[in-house]
Length: 167
Image 1 (tube, one colour):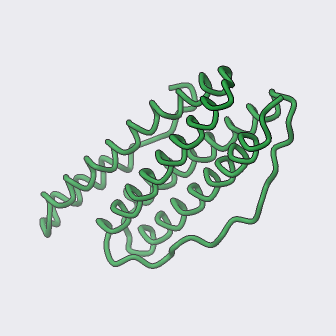
Image 2 (cartoon, one colour):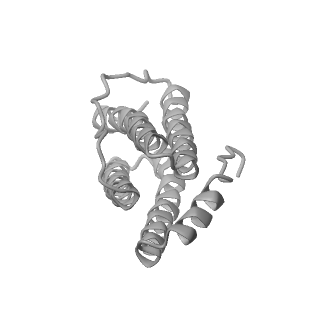
């Protein structure tokens, strides 16, 4: 049985993961609208990953004998000025997720819920990777600047990205 405050926070995080997937799909839609299919694919794969994270929390809540509760998801931002802005927004979103997992970890530590501490460690490790990925893409996009040929090649590389739950 989970502590009520911890259960509520896990449910909030589960819902936030599904919101993040929604936000990444909005970024994909912007990229598709601007004919950047490779960048759109990046965000579609990112959305799949966020849904996977949401389901991982869903399964954990249920495995602990509790009830996963779904809430309304707010509409994400849909207008962007550039591809770079989508990545900057993505990094801000990932930093917020990291902060949220730190808070969850604090709650689990306070209640000495060692199973949840162990469960959350996977997400903390994942967030290091997520933030680094967005940081790298932002660096690349800034370096590319207005070089359309390099941007084209970079986009083609991102078109090959796929999310693998087993990885």
